[in-house]
Length: 153
Image 1 (cartoon, rainbow, N blue to C red):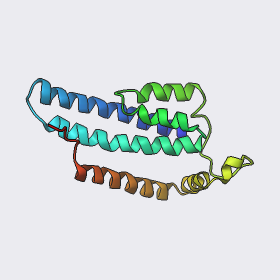
Image 2: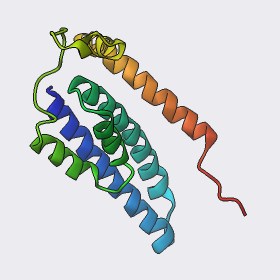
Image 3: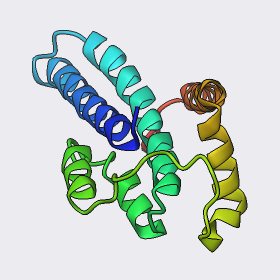
Image 4: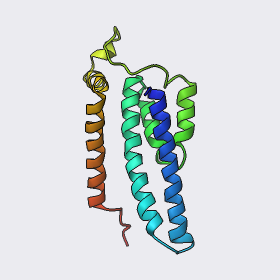
């Protein structure tokens, strides 16, 4: 799967989970019928939100995005549905062009530790999925343990 295809898939999934969360909030706070939608939609959205963040970092490094572009990509997940316009913009501006960088080239950036680690993980996709999946699950679990922010009274 190309970086473009992976990014689009995860960006759309993030937007879909926003819909699930918003519908759940309407059911909980608008109709006061059930909290189940927020429980399920919120959990799914939180998990996919983390996956999207990891995907932005991976593809941002692979595609040599600047720090600003990576930050905008990450922030786009906070605003409902903003991952879709970010994906369209990144695609139109060529930021999703190209394949996975598995080998070092002549670019001096290829010698940076983060670039070398990313290339190594991309060359080992099963390991990338396992390590990335475990990292997302660990962060997700930690956030569940901490719980939602509680406003001060």
